[in-house]
Image (cartoon, rainbow, N blue to C red; front, side, top):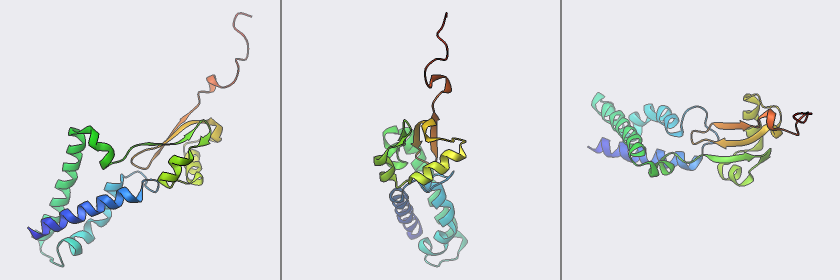
Length: 159
């Protein structure tokens, strides 16, 4: 039972750390998935099992982590209002060709990182960006202007 309690404590601690660190440095994995995969081996060996190398202790620790992960997913599905607390909310970081300083500062996202992400999406100029949103999983979604909406019409209709 001590191993389960230790796993619970470490799980909650890692969740708090991932919420505090922010999402601007994450890639394709969610914050939680990233830490779950990176720390699983060391977690089982040291923090949870207290140097207990038995198979039972390892299975209990990994099982507790897995059950807690499934429980968090179920809570988010069952109670949608909890989702922003558990995973975070998308944040507007660019609007009408200009960075949204408050959103970028809060998420510790630099303009350089935003421009790199835009280039990776094939966006050449910031003026092409209507909106950019930093998603809860760390990816940046870009919404570009429709080329047909830019500027005045070339020729008036019926003329």
